[in-house]
Image 1: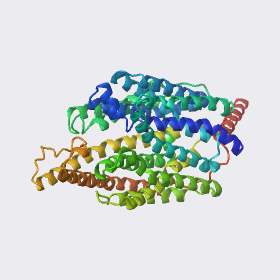
Image 2: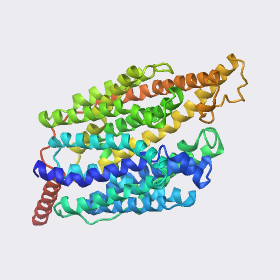
Image 3: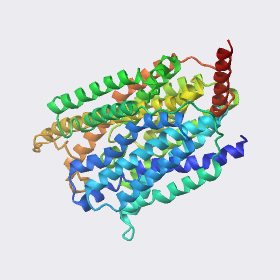
Image 4: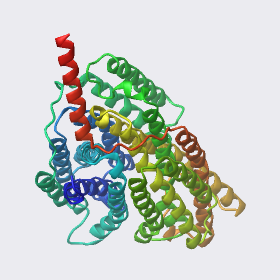
Length: 519
């Protein structure tokens, strides 16, 4: 395919990815209004946030496996269709139960988009040329991440629109993506083996992962880490996943082929993706709260303050992708990205309530540059080193473990944040001779505008110290990711696309069969 044909084919993919990112970010500033309007509880607030993430993370491997068996274009359009249905249900919801269900439907669709976009890219673009196009997806990621919270805030504050349009706004983009994919994406028909879906394995994987994700999401908030709920959820999750491994090892078409982990590159990039998820998402998800509580900024300003990190990610992923496509050398950028990410997290562990925005911007830019060089190129390394028939499975495994890492990091670090804030606030209030109320007020986010000046300063200091601690805890995870990346063996980037390689593999298998029959 020429560059023009590739860009035309990618237009629908980019629109679809923008929809998936927007779905997760546009409701960030609107949720307090949504929950209040529906008369729901704080527990419901948590489930509205986590329902989509759970569904997306748990279904990514299944979408990836389906892409190895069925038409990728049709699966992409199906995932976009599910997203449209979920968005419409959410927008018309008059109860929190329907809203949570609609978020699950949205999450299933977003899981398909997350897995399939990268699979289709690998199918139509040779690894040697893939880097520069990955930079374009970096731009879409950056725009969706930054624009989502801002758009959500504007929609909620506009009286003639309201929070329901936070869900409706993604519908036209999804419909546009479906039309663009139909018009521009041309995937040649390739002879495939008979498709057999491992429904039992899929159920066990989804159930086991959901049990563990529900545990790490709610532990420390809805129940204690050391409780019967923890024992029940972790026990059920581990048993279900052990059963899934048993089933996957014996079925003809496993959802996650265990054999791909014999590939050293796949195993190491999977471990690195998990660690990047913990370090990156677990650390940065609380930055917006730090901007608003510790630095006293508005939600809109807080959204804009993350621009240095997003721009760093955008520039580094684009430049590294272009250079990799030109030279064919990629490992040095993985190692450099892991080093820079570790340094960025270490620098952010020094922040407090008095850190200047200039210094904070520099630290965030360093982190963004490291992540931009590392995250997308881990996928490139894995896709380059697996048979074309396993591209979907390998790609979705990396996305799955990165999402798992982000969920685990967010939940565990969130519990640490709450504990550290409570401790610091109790200490500060006691020193000032102000009654602390038992937990220091760390169990809920305070309304800074209603606090007297002495208490406000104590709260700002507590959140500044606690946020810095999160980055300090995330830094060793980044260091482990660096050690993992060092052991990845660099191999020349292939010059044929996934579809071309699949046709070659099918032809080789046919010739082998003919030879066997003849002999």
